[in-house]
Image (cartoon, rainbow, N blue to C red; front, top):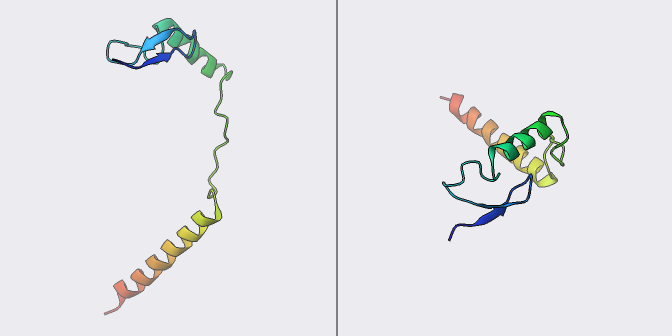
Length: 79
């Protein structure tokens, strides 16, 4: 039994499968309405993107990897 989802635009039930050409939308019309909302900037991603590590653990992990690479580079160039 295929899963059913609600169309993000009109909330109509849509079967999730190859027979639903526009999934998760119920039709091309609903798909284009959603695209228009993104183009008009009515929709947005709620969490801002950031290049900074997400936690102190990530920073520590990066430092550990950099230290390992520094050691391997030293041994690589030695005769």
